Length: 169
Image 1 (cartoon, rainbow, N blue to C red):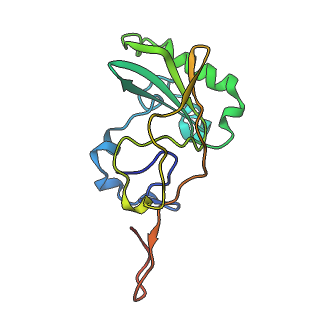
Image 2 (cartoon, rainbow, N blue to C red):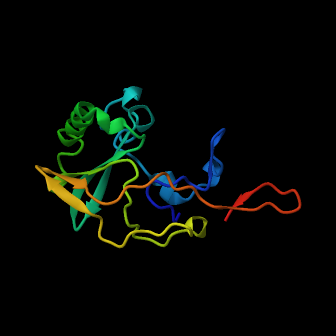
């Protein structure tokens, strides 16, 4: 969809959620975080919108990594909870078959300015992405984002004409 990391989707509406949910792209339709995959159990208090933490599996050079993203600012203030949930995921029978990278975990705080690996949509043309690669530093058995951080990126919208409502670029 051409959306940078930590950017608001052009299709998000605060009142109704996704404005194109019924016709959303396959990428959105097939996406599953660790909670949605059932790895964290059925408890809804472990959902990303409740914890402020998004856990997702990412493949790099034939190995799997657990990406941990701070989805709500301040969620990493309770790292005991982050580590508890991370351990549930990494010791799950559902993930035991995955060839994991070393280190297996990558942590990204809120606003991590991660270089995208795809073209950016024109709605974000005001965004000047950092050059690759993503800056990570090793801390024990974890990679931690060490690059610049920024505020939530908002898509630009076209100025309305003739009384039309604003549209995303």
